[in-house]
Length: 143
Image (cartoon, rainbow, N blue to C red):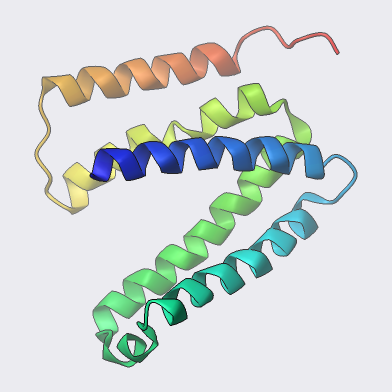
C-alpha cells in the first residue's frame, strides 16, 4: 500500500509544481509560499481534527517533537528555495533537479537511520541523479 501512497504523492507533487509555477509568475516566491503554507496548515490540522487525533498532540515525547519541529523548519527552507528556483527557472528543469533530494534521502537514511541498501538502490539512485542532471543541464527551451 505504501507504493500507492508514494505514487499518489508524486502525482500530487507534480501538480503542485505546475500550479505553483503558474501562480508565481507575477508574485514574489516567498509570498506565494506563505499563501500555500496557510492552506497547508488549515488542511493538515483539519485532517488531524477529523480523524480525532488532536488529543494525541499532548502525548508526543520531547525527542519526537524536537525532530518534527526541526523537520518543519527544514521543510520551510526547502520550500522557499524550491519556490525561488521555480520563479527563476523552468518547472520542467528545476523540479527534476530538486528531486535529487531522493538521492540525498538514501544517503541520510543509510548514515543516520542505519538502513541497509543493496546494489539496485545504488544503481537506481545513480540513474535518478544522472537523469535529473541531464534534464536540468539541457539546453533551455525557447519561449
